[in-house]
Length: 203
Image: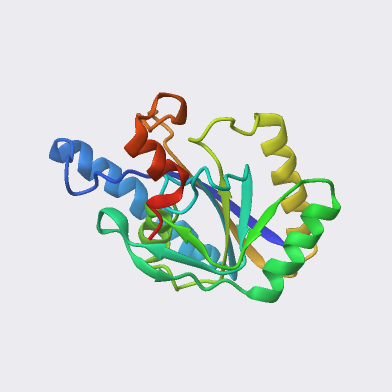
């Protein structure tokens, strides 16, 4: 396996609450440079680690980690919408390998993902469907959260599996690297919000 790692912050406010033009130009330039490096690497597979913002995962079932064997982007905040090109057999093999290594990885054959997954694929690859992708959800908002140690062990288990592949693998991390936006908390939610967090907000 040849691997290339890149991390990118995501935000639903792109195009809605932009900074001054000089800052925006700098950010866009950095993303363009990353896009060129990734194009030169020419990945055959993308492994994308990202959170959710109560758009696909709710408190009816909230796993710490989930691999999408099938996944669809919902298109929130004008991000790209549509099916992700998940290679089913490879995703299933990955899930078995990670679970057999001692990590309790959930799987979903109908995973809904939001801008946290869609934006890196849009900005760095030009769309959702350019390269086969293994989408991996990491719960980053809904307490109790997985700890850093367990998350690292997930990454190590994924890495061991990927190392068995004769592929160029782009590993993407998507998150809020510079901020911690407010998110609803179940313990503080009123009845209406609690109902949504328990799953009534599913699309």
